Length: 598
Image 1: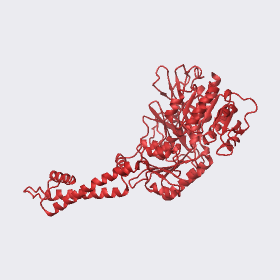
Image 2 (image 1 turned 135 degrees about the horizontal axis):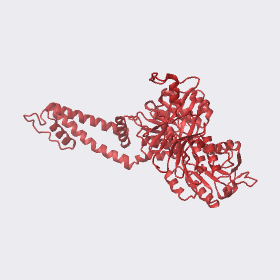
Image 3 (image 1 turned 180 degrees about the vertical axis):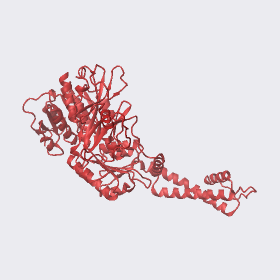
Protein backbone atom coordinates (compact mmCIF):
# COMPACT_ATOMS: atom_id res chain seq x y z
CA UNK A 1 0.00 0.00 0.00
CA UNK A 2 1.35 3.43 -0.93
CA UNK A 3 0.68 6.74 0.77
CA UNK A 4 -1.37 7.79 -2.26
CA UNK A 5 -3.61 4.78 -1.73
CA UNK A 6 -4.81 2.20 -4.15
CA UNK A 7 -7.93 0.23 -4.83
CA UNK A 8 -10.74 0.83 -7.23
CA UNK A 9 -12.63 4.08 -6.73
CA UNK A 10 -16.13 4.11 -8.25
CA UNK A 11 -15.60 3.98 -12.01
CA UNK A 12 -19.05 5.25 -12.82
CA UNK A 13 -20.08 8.59 -11.32
CA UNK A 14 -21.98 7.96 -8.11
CA UNK A 15 -24.16 10.33 -6.11
CA UNK A 16 -26.56 10.43 -3.19
CA UNK A 17 -24.41 7.81 -1.47
CA UNK A 18 -23.04 7.48 2.05
CA UNK A 19 -19.36 7.26 2.90
CA UNK A 20 -18.00 5.27 5.85
CA UNK A 21 -14.37 5.91 6.74
CA UNK A 22 -12.76 3.15 8.76
CA UNK A 23 -11.95 -0.54 8.83
CA UNK A 24 -12.71 -1.35 12.47
CA UNK A 25 -15.60 -3.23 14.09
CA UNK A 26 -17.76 -0.11 14.32
CA UNK A 27 -17.29 0.61 10.63
CA UNK A 28 -18.23 -3.00 9.83
CA UNK A 29 -21.45 -2.82 11.87
CA UNK A 30 -22.31 0.61 10.51
CA UNK A 31 -21.96 -0.54 6.91
CA UNK A 32 -24.23 -3.50 7.74
CA UNK A 33 -26.82 -1.14 9.21
CA UNK A 34 -26.80 1.08 6.13
CA UNK A 35 -26.91 -1.62 3.43
CA UNK A 36 -29.22 -4.11 5.16
CA UNK A 37 -31.70 -1.88 6.96
CA UNK A 38 -31.58 1.51 5.25
CA UNK A 39 -30.76 0.04 1.83
CA UNK A 40 -28.65 2.98 0.71
CA UNK A 41 -25.52 2.93 -1.49
CA UNK A 42 -22.35 2.91 0.61
CA UNK A 43 -18.74 3.63 -0.31
CA UNK A 44 -16.17 2.54 2.28
CA UNK A 45 -12.79 4.17 2.75
CA UNK A 46 -10.39 1.81 4.58
CA UNK A 47 -6.76 2.35 5.65
CA UNK A 48 -5.71 -1.19 4.70
CA UNK A 49 -7.72 -3.72 2.70
CA UNK A 50 -5.93 -6.69 4.23
CA UNK A 51 -6.27 -5.88 7.92
CA UNK A 52 -8.86 -5.63 10.67
CA UNK A 53 -12.46 -5.84 9.38
CA UNK A 54 -11.71 -4.51 5.88
CA UNK A 55 -11.76 -7.96 4.16
CA UNK A 56 -15.20 -8.73 5.60
CA UNK A 57 -16.51 -5.28 4.70
CA UNK A 58 -15.43 -5.83 1.10
CA UNK A 59 -17.48 -9.04 0.93
CA UNK A 60 -20.75 -7.41 2.05
CA UNK A 61 -23.54 -7.24 -0.49
CA UNK A 62 -24.72 -3.74 -1.22
CA UNK A 63 -21.37 -1.99 -0.81
CA UNK A 64 -20.85 0.16 -3.92
CA UNK A 65 -17.07 0.33 -3.58
CA UNK A 66 -14.20 -0.13 -1.16
CA UNK A 67 -11.34 2.35 -1.56
CA UNK A 68 -8.02 2.14 0.25
CA UNK A 69 -6.10 5.19 1.45
CA UNK A 70 -3.71 5.49 4.37
CA UNK A 71 -5.64 8.47 5.73
CA UNK A 72 -8.72 10.55 5.06
CA UNK A 73 -6.90 13.08 2.91
CA UNK A 74 -8.19 15.56 0.34
CA UNK A 75 -7.32 13.08 -2.39
CA UNK A 76 -9.12 10.27 -0.57
CA UNK A 77 -12.26 12.36 -0.19
CA UNK A 78 -12.27 13.17 -3.88
CA UNK A 79 -11.80 9.49 -4.70
CA UNK A 80 -14.98 8.54 -2.81
CA UNK A 81 -16.95 11.41 -4.46
CA UNK A 82 -17.54 13.40 -1.29
CA UNK A 83 -18.89 16.29 -3.36
CA UNK A 84 -21.98 14.25 -4.37
CA UNK A 85 -22.46 12.24 -1.15
CA UNK A 86 -25.39 12.64 1.22
CA UNK A 87 -23.56 11.61 4.36
CA UNK A 88 -20.11 10.91 5.78
CA UNK A 89 -19.30 8.79 8.85
CA UNK A 90 -15.82 9.07 10.38
CA UNK A 91 -15.54 6.13 12.79
CA UNK A 92 -11.82 5.45 12.85
CA UNK A 93 -8.70 7.45 13.64
CA UNK A 94 -8.00 9.95 16.42
CA UNK A 95 -10.22 12.86 17.42
CA UNK A 96 -7.87 15.31 15.71
CA UNK A 97 -7.85 13.33 12.45
CA UNK A 98 -11.64 13.07 12.40
CA UNK A 99 -12.08 16.79 13.03
CA UNK A 100 -9.70 17.65 10.18
CA UNK A 101 -11.47 15.23 7.82
CA UNK A 102 -14.91 16.57 8.77
CA UNK A 103 -13.94 20.17 8.06
CA UNK A 104 -12.34 19.16 4.76
CA UNK A 105 -15.48 17.26 3.70
CA UNK A 106 -17.68 20.22 4.60
CA UNK A 107 -15.52 22.45 2.42
CA UNK A 108 -16.03 20.11 -0.56
CA UNK A 109 -19.77 19.59 0.10
CA UNK A 110 -21.38 22.22 2.38
CA UNK A 111 -24.67 20.30 2.63
CA UNK A 112 -23.28 16.88 3.51
CA UNK A 113 -24.44 15.20 6.71
CA UNK A 114 -21.38 14.38 8.88
CA UNK A 115 -21.19 12.02 11.85
CA UNK A 116 -17.82 11.67 13.51
CA UNK A 117 -16.65 9.46 16.35
CA UNK A 118 -15.12 11.47 19.18
CA UNK A 119 -13.74 10.10 22.44
CA UNK A 120 -13.60 13.59 23.98
CA UNK A 121 -17.30 14.42 24.26
CA UNK A 122 -16.75 18.00 25.43
CA UNK A 123 -14.59 18.67 22.38
CA UNK A 124 -17.20 16.95 20.22
CA UNK A 125 -19.92 19.30 21.47
CA UNK A 126 -17.79 22.28 20.50
CA UNK A 127 -16.99 20.82 17.08
CA UNK A 128 -20.70 20.40 16.32
CA UNK A 129 -20.97 24.20 16.34
CA UNK A 130 -18.41 24.37 13.54
CA UNK A 131 -20.30 21.90 11.36
CA UNK A 132 -23.39 23.05 9.47
CA UNK A 133 -24.97 19.61 9.54
CA UNK A 134 -22.92 17.41 11.81
CA UNK A 135 -23.06 15.29 14.96
CA UNK A 136 -20.25 14.04 17.19
CA UNK A 137 -20.89 10.71 18.93
CA UNK A 138 -18.83 8.48 21.19
CA UNK A 139 -19.19 4.77 20.57
CA UNK A 140 -17.57 3.92 23.89
CA UNK A 141 -19.84 6.33 25.80
CA UNK A 142 -22.89 4.76 24.14
CA UNK A 143 -21.86 1.21 25.03
CA UNK A 144 -20.16 1.67 28.42
CA UNK A 145 -23.37 1.94 30.53
CA UNK A 146 -24.49 -1.49 29.30
CA UNK A 147 -21.20 -3.05 30.44
CA UNK A 148 -21.17 -1.26 33.80
CA UNK A 149 -24.79 -2.12 34.58
CA UNK A 150 -24.26 -5.74 33.56
CA UNK A 151 -21.29 -5.96 35.95
CA UNK A 152 -23.48 -4.68 38.79
CA UNK A 153 -26.35 -7.01 37.82
CA UNK A 154 -28.70 -4.09 37.53
CA UNK A 155 -30.85 -3.13 34.55
CA UNK A 156 -29.41 -0.82 31.96
CA UNK A 157 -31.61 2.26 31.64
CA UNK A 158 -32.28 5.16 29.28
CA UNK A 159 -33.55 8.46 30.62
CA UNK A 160 -36.65 9.95 28.98
CA UNK A 161 -37.80 13.11 30.68
CA UNK A 162 -37.87 12.46 34.42
CA UNK A 163 -38.19 8.68 34.09
CA UNK A 164 -35.77 5.88 33.37
CA UNK A 165 -36.69 3.08 30.97
CA UNK A 166 -35.29 -0.39 31.57
CA UNK A 167 -35.89 -4.00 30.55
CA UNK A 168 -37.43 -6.42 33.08
CA UNK A 169 -37.62 -10.18 32.61
CA UNK A 170 -40.25 -12.74 33.63
CA UNK A 171 -41.01 -12.52 37.37
CA UNK A 172 -39.50 -9.02 37.66
CA UNK A 173 -42.15 -7.58 35.33
CA UNK A 174 -44.51 -5.28 37.24
CA UNK A 175 -48.16 -4.57 36.58
CA UNK A 176 -47.39 -1.00 35.43
CA UNK A 177 -45.19 -2.09 32.52
CA UNK A 178 -45.38 -0.01 29.35
CA UNK A 179 -45.28 -2.85 26.86
CA UNK A 180 -43.83 -6.27 26.10
CA UNK A 181 -40.63 -5.85 24.12
CA UNK A 182 -39.59 -9.48 23.60
CA UNK A 183 -40.99 -12.99 23.87
CA UNK A 184 -39.96 -16.55 22.99
CA UNK A 185 -36.76 -15.99 24.97
CA UNK A 186 -34.71 -19.16 25.15
CA UNK A 187 -31.31 -18.74 26.78
CA UNK A 188 -30.05 -21.83 24.97
CA UNK A 189 -31.10 -20.45 21.59
CA UNK A 190 -31.04 -16.66 21.53
CA UNK A 191 -32.06 -16.68 17.88
CA UNK A 192 -35.63 -17.48 18.94
CA UNK A 193 -36.12 -14.09 20.59
CA UNK A 194 -38.88 -12.07 18.94
CA UNK A 195 -38.58 -8.32 19.50
CA UNK A 196 -41.59 -5.98 19.81
CA UNK A 197 -44.22 -8.69 19.20
CA UNK A 198 -47.71 -7.77 18.10
CA UNK A 199 -49.39 -6.24 21.14
CA UNK A 200 -52.99 -6.88 22.08
CA UNK A 201 -55.30 -3.98 22.78
CA UNK A 202 -55.23 -2.20 26.12
CA UNK A 203 -58.49 -3.90 27.20
CA UNK A 204 -57.32 -7.41 26.33
CA UNK A 205 -56.28 -8.27 29.88
CA UNK A 206 -59.68 -7.27 31.28
CA UNK A 207 -61.50 -9.31 28.63
CA UNK A 208 -59.34 -12.32 29.51
CA UNK A 209 -60.14 -11.95 33.22
CA UNK A 210 -63.86 -11.68 32.53
CA UNK A 211 -63.80 -14.80 30.42
CA UNK A 212 -61.83 -16.74 33.02
CA UNK A 213 -63.71 -15.77 36.18
CA UNK A 214 -67.20 -14.85 34.94
CA UNK A 215 -69.29 -11.91 36.04
CA UNK A 216 -68.84 -12.30 39.78
CA UNK A 217 -66.09 -14.84 40.18
CA UNK A 218 -63.22 -14.26 42.56
CA UNK A 219 -60.01 -12.79 41.27
CA UNK A 220 -57.14 -15.02 42.35
CA UNK A 221 -54.05 -13.28 43.59
CA UNK A 222 -50.56 -14.60 43.97
CA UNK A 223 -47.17 -14.63 42.32
CA UNK A 224 -46.67 -15.47 38.70
CA UNK A 225 -45.37 -18.94 37.83
CA UNK A 226 -41.74 -19.34 38.77
CA UNK A 227 -40.75 -20.59 35.32
CA UNK A 228 -42.08 -19.48 31.92
CA UNK A 229 -43.86 -22.03 29.82
CA UNK A 230 -41.39 -24.09 27.75
CA UNK A 231 -43.66 -23.73 24.77
CA UNK A 232 -43.48 -19.96 24.71
CA UNK A 233 -40.21 -19.19 26.49
CA UNK A 234 -39.58 -16.16 28.69
CA UNK A 235 -40.70 -12.61 28.08
CA UNK A 236 -39.23 -9.16 28.61
CA UNK A 237 -41.08 -5.90 29.16
CA UNK A 238 -40.26 -2.22 29.18
CA UNK A 239 -40.79 -0.51 32.52
CA UNK A 240 -40.19 2.95 33.93
CA UNK A 241 -38.58 3.98 37.19
CA UNK A 242 -38.76 7.42 38.84
CA UNK A 243 -34.99 7.36 39.32
CA UNK A 244 -32.02 5.43 38.01
CA UNK A 245 -31.59 2.02 39.69
CA UNK A 246 -29.39 2.42 42.75
CA UNK A 247 -26.13 0.57 43.27
CA UNK A 248 -26.58 -1.76 46.23
CA UNK A 249 -23.33 -1.20 48.13
CA UNK A 250 -23.65 -0.41 51.87
CA UNK A 251 -22.35 3.00 52.83
CA UNK A 252 -19.99 1.56 55.42
CA UNK A 253 -18.33 -0.61 52.77
CA UNK A 254 -17.81 2.42 50.56
CA UNK A 255 -16.36 4.39 53.51
CA UNK A 256 -14.02 1.54 54.48
CA UNK A 257 -12.83 1.20 50.89
CA UNK A 258 -12.23 4.96 50.58
CA UNK A 259 -10.25 5.12 53.83
CA UNK A 260 -8.12 2.08 53.07
CA UNK A 261 -7.57 3.17 49.49
CA UNK A 262 -6.51 6.68 50.58
CA UNK A 263 -4.08 5.24 53.14
CA UNK A 264 -2.64 2.90 50.52
CA UNK A 265 -2.24 5.77 48.05
CA UNK A 266 -0.13 7.89 50.40
CA UNK A 267 1.93 5.11 51.96
CA UNK A 268 3.89 2.06 50.93
CA UNK A 269 3.43 -1.35 52.54
CA UNK A 270 6.35 -0.87 54.96
CA UNK A 271 5.19 2.57 56.06
CA UNK A 272 1.71 1.21 56.65
CA UNK A 273 3.14 -1.50 58.92
CA UNK A 274 5.06 1.13 60.93
CA UNK A 275 2.03 3.42 61.21
CA UNK A 276 -0.40 0.67 62.18
CA UNK A 277 2.03 -0.77 64.77
CA UNK A 278 2.69 2.65 66.33
CA UNK A 279 -1.01 3.51 66.38
CA UNK A 280 -1.86 0.19 68.04
CA UNK A 281 0.83 0.79 70.69
CA UNK A 282 -0.51 4.27 71.41
CA UNK A 283 -4.08 3.02 71.76
CA UNK A 284 -2.98 0.19 74.07
CA UNK A 285 -0.91 2.55 76.24
CA UNK A 286 -3.78 5.06 76.42
CA UNK A 287 -6.13 2.28 77.49
CA UNK A 288 -3.65 1.23 80.20
CA UNK A 289 -3.42 4.79 81.54
CA UNK A 290 -7.18 5.10 81.62
CA UNK A 291 -7.55 1.75 83.38
CA UNK A 292 -4.96 2.52 86.08
CA UNK A 293 -6.06 6.03 87.05
CA UNK A 294 -9.75 5.92 86.08
CA UNK A 295 -9.76 9.48 84.68
CA UNK A 296 -10.50 9.55 80.94
CA UNK A 297 -9.96 13.31 80.48
CA UNK A 298 -6.61 13.31 82.23
CA UNK A 299 -5.47 10.16 80.36
CA UNK A 300 -6.34 11.75 77.03
CA UNK A 301 -4.60 15.00 78.01
CA UNK A 302 -1.44 13.24 79.14
CA UNK A 303 -1.39 11.00 76.04
CA UNK A 304 -1.61 13.95 73.68
CA UNK A 305 1.17 15.76 75.50
CA UNK A 306 3.32 12.63 75.37
CA UNK A 307 2.69 12.29 71.63
CA UNK A 308 3.84 15.88 71.18
CA UNK A 309 6.98 15.22 73.26
CA UNK A 310 5.87 17.38 76.22
CA UNK A 311 5.69 14.64 78.87
CA UNK A 312 6.58 15.27 82.55
CA UNK A 313 7.81 11.84 83.70
CA UNK A 314 8.67 12.70 87.34
CA UNK A 315 5.23 13.99 88.26
CA UNK A 316 3.99 12.15 91.40
CA UNK A 317 0.52 10.67 91.72
CA UNK A 318 -2.30 12.53 93.46
CA UNK A 319 -5.00 11.43 95.79
CA UNK A 320 -7.73 11.33 93.16
CA UNK A 321 -5.81 8.76 91.13
CA UNK A 322 -4.61 11.18 88.43
CA UNK A 323 -0.96 11.74 87.69
CA UNK A 324 1.86 9.55 86.46
CA UNK A 325 2.65 7.70 89.62
CA UNK A 326 3.20 3.99 89.27
CA UNK A 327 5.51 1.87 87.13
CA UNK A 328 2.94 0.76 84.54
CA UNK A 329 1.70 4.29 83.98
CA UNK A 330 5.24 5.50 83.38
CA UNK A 331 5.86 2.62 80.96
CA UNK A 332 2.71 3.56 79.09
CA UNK A 333 3.83 7.17 78.83
CA UNK A 334 7.26 6.11 77.57
CA UNK A 335 5.60 4.00 74.86
CA UNK A 336 3.38 6.89 73.79
CA UNK A 337 6.31 9.31 73.73
CA UNK A 338 8.49 7.06 71.57
CA UNK A 339 5.58 6.39 69.20
CA UNK A 340 5.05 10.14 68.93
CA UNK A 341 8.70 10.55 68.02
CA UNK A 342 8.21 7.86 65.33
CA UNK A 343 5.28 9.66 63.67
CA UNK A 344 7.36 12.70 62.67
CA UNK A 345 9.91 10.88 60.45
CA UNK A 346 7.17 8.63 59.05
CA UNK A 347 5.16 11.71 58.02
CA UNK A 348 8.30 13.13 56.41
CA UNK A 349 8.89 9.85 54.57
CA UNK A 350 5.32 9.92 53.27
CA UNK A 351 5.71 13.45 51.92
CA UNK A 352 9.02 12.53 50.26
CA UNK A 353 7.47 9.42 48.71
CA UNK A 354 4.41 11.22 47.41
CA UNK A 355 6.04 14.42 46.18
CA UNK A 356 9.78 14.02 45.77
CA UNK A 357 9.85 10.49 44.38
CA UNK A 358 6.86 11.10 42.09
CA UNK A 359 4.69 8.34 43.49
CA UNK A 360 1.63 10.01 41.99
CA UNK A 361 2.96 9.21 38.54
CA UNK A 362 3.40 5.50 39.16
CA UNK A 363 0.88 2.78 38.57
CA UNK A 364 -1.02 1.76 41.68
CA UNK A 365 -1.55 -1.89 42.44
CA UNK A 366 -4.62 -2.86 44.47
CA UNK A 367 -3.88 -3.24 48.16
CA UNK A 368 -5.09 -5.58 50.86
CA UNK A 369 -8.12 -3.37 51.52
CA UNK A 370 -9.58 -3.85 48.04
CA UNK A 371 -12.83 -5.80 48.41
CA UNK A 372 -16.09 -6.23 46.54
CA UNK A 373 -14.62 -4.49 43.49
CA UNK A 374 -14.98 -4.84 39.73
CA UNK A 375 -11.96 -5.88 37.66
CA UNK A 376 -11.94 -4.26 34.21
CA UNK A 377 -9.68 -6.08 31.75
CA UNK A 378 -8.55 -3.81 28.90
CA UNK A 379 -8.18 -0.04 29.24
CA UNK A 380 -9.01 1.05 25.72
CA UNK A 381 -11.80 3.52 24.99
CA UNK A 382 -14.56 1.27 26.31
CA UNK A 383 -12.63 0.04 29.34
CA UNK A 384 -11.75 3.58 30.33
CA UNK A 385 -15.41 4.63 30.11
CA UNK A 386 -16.53 1.63 32.16
CA UNK A 387 -13.95 2.36 34.87
CA UNK A 388 -14.99 6.02 34.99
CA UNK A 389 -18.67 5.15 35.28
CA UNK A 390 -18.14 2.60 38.04
CA UNK A 391 -15.87 5.01 39.90
CA UNK A 392 -18.51 7.75 39.64
CA UNK A 393 -21.08 5.38 41.16
CA UNK A 394 -18.77 4.79 44.12
CA UNK A 395 -18.02 1.19 43.19
CA UNK A 396 -14.45 -0.02 43.93
CA UNK A 397 -12.77 -0.82 40.63
CA UNK A 398 -9.37 -2.12 39.50
CA UNK A 399 -8.01 -1.74 35.96
CA UNK A 400 -5.93 -4.40 34.23
CA UNK A 401 -3.91 -3.73 31.09
CA UNK A 402 -1.08 -5.64 29.39
CA UNK A 403 0.09 -2.75 27.19
CA UNK A 404 1.95 -0.08 29.22
CA UNK A 405 1.33 2.42 26.37
CA UNK A 406 -2.46 2.04 26.42
CA UNK A 407 -4.16 5.43 26.26
CA UNK A 408 -6.56 4.62 29.08
CA UNK A 409 -3.92 4.05 31.77
CA UNK A 410 -3.26 7.75 32.35
CA UNK A 411 -6.98 8.56 32.40
CA UNK A 412 -7.70 5.81 34.93
CA UNK A 413 -4.69 6.80 37.01
CA UNK A 414 -5.96 10.38 37.12
CA UNK A 415 -9.11 9.07 38.81
CA UNK A 416 -7.00 7.45 41.54
CA UNK A 417 -8.01 3.96 40.43
CA UNK A 418 -5.42 1.19 40.96
CA UNK A 419 -4.07 -0.36 37.76
CA UNK A 420 -2.28 -3.64 37.18
CA UNK A 421 0.05 -3.18 34.19
CA UNK A 422 1.73 -6.43 33.19
CA UNK A 423 2.22 -8.44 30.00
CA UNK A 424 2.70 -11.70 31.90
CA UNK A 425 0.24 -14.59 32.25
CA UNK A 426 -3.35 -13.44 32.58
CA UNK A 427 -3.89 -15.65 35.63
CA UNK A 428 -1.12 -13.82 37.48
CA UNK A 429 -2.53 -10.44 36.49
CA UNK A 430 -5.96 -11.41 37.80
CA UNK A 431 -4.39 -12.61 41.04
CA UNK A 432 -2.68 -9.24 41.50
CA UNK A 433 -6.03 -7.58 40.81
CA UNK A 434 -7.39 -9.51 43.84
CA UNK A 435 -9.90 -11.50 41.81
CA UNK A 436 -10.77 -13.70 44.81
CA UNK A 437 -12.30 -10.70 46.56
CA UNK A 438 -13.98 -9.12 43.51
CA UNK A 439 -17.68 -8.97 42.65
CA UNK A 440 -17.35 -9.03 38.85
CA UNK A 441 -14.91 -9.19 35.93
CA UNK A 442 -15.53 -7.05 32.84
CA UNK A 443 -13.37 -8.12 29.87
CA UNK A 444 -13.51 -5.37 27.22
CA UNK A 445 -10.27 -5.68 25.27
CA UNK A 446 -10.48 -5.47 21.50
CA UNK A 447 -9.91 -9.21 21.00
CA UNK A 448 -12.68 -11.79 21.54
CA UNK A 449 -10.20 -14.58 22.36
CA UNK A 450 -8.49 -12.47 25.04
CA UNK A 451 -11.84 -11.62 26.61
CA UNK A 452 -12.89 -15.27 26.66
CA UNK A 453 -9.55 -16.24 28.16
CA UNK A 454 -10.07 -13.68 30.93
CA UNK A 455 -13.52 -15.15 31.62
CA UNK A 456 -12.23 -18.71 31.82
CA UNK A 457 -9.26 -17.76 33.99
CA UNK A 458 -11.59 -15.84 36.31
CA UNK A 459 -13.98 -18.78 36.56
CA UNK A 460 -11.08 -21.12 37.35
CA UNK A 461 -10.31 -19.02 40.43
CA UNK A 462 -13.88 -17.94 41.34
CA UNK A 463 -16.57 -20.19 39.81
CA UNK A 464 -19.33 -17.88 41.04
CA UNK A 465 -17.88 -14.54 39.89
CA UNK A 466 -20.02 -12.38 37.61
CA UNK A 467 -18.47 -12.12 34.11
CA UNK A 468 -19.25 -9.54 31.42
CA UNK A 469 -17.63 -10.04 28.02
CA UNK A 470 -17.15 -7.84 25.00
CA UNK A 471 -17.69 -10.12 22.00
CA UNK A 472 -18.12 -9.12 18.37
CA UNK A 473 -19.13 -12.48 16.94
CA UNK A 474 -22.80 -13.33 17.57
CA UNK A 475 -22.46 -17.11 17.23
CA UNK A 476 -19.47 -17.05 19.56
CA UNK A 477 -21.56 -15.15 22.12
CA UNK A 478 -24.43 -17.63 21.82
CA UNK A 479 -22.09 -20.50 22.68
CA UNK A 480 -20.80 -18.56 25.69
CA UNK A 481 -24.36 -17.97 26.94
CA UNK A 482 -25.19 -21.64 26.52
CA UNK A 483 -22.02 -22.81 28.31
CA UNK A 484 -21.39 -20.36 31.17
CA UNK A 485 -23.70 -19.28 33.98
CA UNK A 486 -23.88 -15.79 35.47
CA UNK A 487 -22.40 -14.28 32.32
CA UNK A 488 -23.39 -11.35 30.13
CA UNK A 489 -22.15 -10.54 26.64
CA UNK A 490 -22.20 -7.17 24.92
CA UNK A 491 -20.85 -5.88 21.62
CA UNK A 492 -19.64 -2.29 21.55
CA UNK A 493 -20.14 -1.94 17.81
CA UNK A 494 -23.57 -3.62 17.96
CA UNK A 495 -24.71 -1.19 20.66
CA UNK A 496 -23.33 1.96 19.06
CA UNK A 497 -23.66 1.36 15.29
CA UNK A 498 -27.48 1.88 15.24
CA UNK A 499 -27.04 5.27 16.89
CA UNK A 500 -24.40 6.27 14.30
CA UNK A 501 -26.63 5.09 11.44
CA UNK A 502 -29.65 6.96 12.82
CA UNK A 503 -27.58 10.12 13.25
CA UNK A 504 -26.35 9.77 9.67
CA UNK A 505 -30.02 9.78 8.62
CA UNK A 506 -30.78 12.80 10.79
CA UNK A 507 -32.53 10.89 13.60
CA UNK A 508 -31.57 11.22 17.26
CA UNK A 509 -31.36 8.13 19.45
CA UNK A 510 -31.67 8.73 23.19
CA UNK A 511 -30.09 5.41 24.09
CA UNK A 512 -29.94 1.68 23.53
CA UNK A 513 -31.29 -1.15 25.67
CA UNK A 514 -29.95 -4.70 25.47
CA UNK A 515 -32.15 -7.76 25.33
CA UNK A 516 -29.34 -10.27 25.63
CA UNK A 517 -27.46 -9.85 22.32
CA UNK A 518 -30.31 -7.92 20.70
CA UNK A 519 -30.70 -4.15 20.77
CA UNK A 520 -33.68 -1.85 21.16
CA UNK A 521 -33.31 1.82 20.33
CA UNK A 522 -35.14 4.52 22.27
CA UNK A 523 -35.63 7.60 20.10
CA UNK A 524 -37.62 10.82 20.36
CA UNK A 525 -38.96 12.16 17.06
CA UNK A 526 -40.07 15.81 16.91
CA UNK A 527 -42.99 16.68 14.63
CA UNK A 528 -41.54 19.61 12.76
CA UNK A 529 -41.98 20.86 9.24
CA UNK A 530 -39.90 18.70 6.92
CA UNK A 531 -39.71 15.68 9.25
CA UNK A 532 -42.69 13.85 7.72
CA UNK A 533 -44.36 13.30 11.12
CA UNK A 534 -47.04 15.98 10.90
CA UNK A 535 -50.43 14.43 10.17
CA UNK A 536 -49.47 10.89 11.28
CA UNK A 537 -50.99 9.00 14.22
CA UNK A 538 -50.00 5.98 16.33
CA UNK A 539 -51.47 3.55 13.79
CA UNK A 540 -49.31 5.09 11.05
CA UNK A 541 -46.13 4.94 13.13
CA UNK A 542 -46.37 1.60 14.86
CA UNK A 543 -45.00 -1.44 13.13
CA UNK A 544 -45.35 -4.84 14.89
CA UNK A 545 -41.90 -6.27 15.27
CA UNK A 546 -40.28 -2.93 14.44
CA UNK A 547 -41.70 0.22 16.09
CA UNK A 548 -43.72 0.80 19.25
CA UNK A 549 -44.90 4.26 20.35
CA UNK A 550 -44.17 4.65 24.07
CA UNK A 551 -45.14 8.23 24.82
CA UNK A 552 -46.41 11.40 23.20
CA UNK A 553 -45.39 14.92 24.14
CA UNK A 554 -47.91 17.55 23.05
CA UNK A 555 -46.98 21.06 21.96
CA UNK A 556 -49.32 22.61 24.53
CA UNK A 557 -47.56 20.81 27.41
CA UNK A 558 -43.99 20.13 26.22
CA UNK A 559 -42.72 18.99 29.63
CA UNK A 560 -45.35 16.28 30.11
CA UNK A 561 -44.89 12.81 28.62
CA UNK A 562 -48.15 10.92 28.05
CA UNK A 563 -47.08 7.28 28.40
CA UNK A 564 -49.12 4.79 26.36
CA UNK A 565 -51.12 7.67 24.88
CA UNK A 566 -54.68 6.34 24.63
CA UNK A 567 -55.86 8.26 21.55
CA UNK A 568 -54.38 6.21 18.72
CA UNK A 569 -56.13 8.23 16.01
CA UNK A 570 -54.96 11.73 16.99
CA UNK A 571 -52.61 13.12 14.36
CA UNK A 572 -49.39 14.82 15.30
CA UNK A 573 -49.26 18.60 15.05
CA UNK A 574 -46.27 20.94 14.78
CA UNK A 575 -44.46 21.03 18.12
CA UNK A 576 -45.54 17.54 19.19
CA UNK A 577 -43.05 14.71 19.59
CA UNK A 578 -43.20 10.96 20.06
CA UNK A 579 -40.94 8.57 21.97
CA UNK A 580 -40.57 5.21 20.26
CA UNK A 581 -38.91 1.90 21.02
CA UNK A 582 -37.66 0.42 17.79
CA UNK A 583 -35.49 -2.30 16.36
CA UNK A 584 -32.67 -1.43 13.98
CA UNK A 585 -34.70 -2.45 10.94
CA UNK A 586 -37.81 -0.78 12.36
CA UNK A 587 -36.04 2.57 12.63
CA UNK A 588 -34.82 2.19 9.05
CA UNK A 589 -38.36 1.48 7.80
CA UNK A 590 -39.70 4.39 9.81
CA UNK A 591 -37.03 6.66 8.34
CA UNK A 592 -38.07 5.58 4.83
CA UNK A 593 -41.75 6.26 5.62
CA UNK A 594 -41.01 9.72 7.00
CA UNK A 595 -38.75 10.55 4.05
CA UNK A 596 -41.49 9.60 1.60
CA UNK A 597 -44.00 11.65 3.60
CA UNK A 598 -41.99 14.86 3.35
